[in-house]
Length: 209
Image (cartoon, rainbow, N blue to C red; front, top):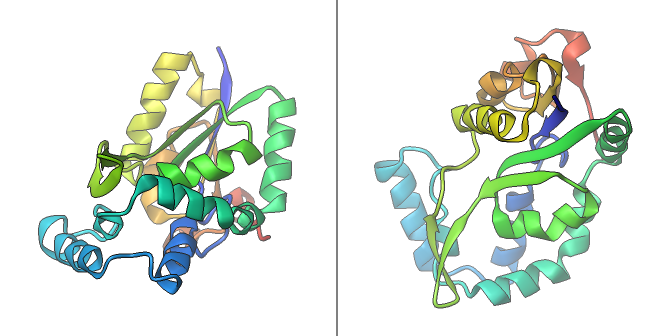
């Protein structure tokens, strides 16, 4: 059976602020986001999903091709945000025979822009719906966040013949705890305060830029 390393992106491979926060800041600065999308996102988050992570309505109406070109121009900002310590760690684990997976709630078009920097076996992201070349702001699949990450790890292990007891998980959020504990070994990377209190110091890693 194979051994694998499962990585989160935001807060882990990319120290905060998150990749999407970086993108949204750039989009707002360039007046690329439609105000209607922001209003719908806020209302959906409060009343429909009761969770600000489950709505991507702020992308509503954007042309995917234009967004991709915008991201290409900002590509260095995303690549430079990746922790050099994290990249070195990944390469070391690859040399040790681990298969490398990325499981993140970041949108697929962000991950597409940076995944060439790291040779992941597979990536699992938030996939957004596109109709007639434009983003609708709706998700096509569950967000790889919280308990959903745990479910994805179980699915990957079954499909790719991975021994989870010999594998490693990396994440930064308290919501990642079930995902982290799904493998034989885990590390809390740049952990938020709630997770840090639950994890022993020897299982904590600080990766900066």
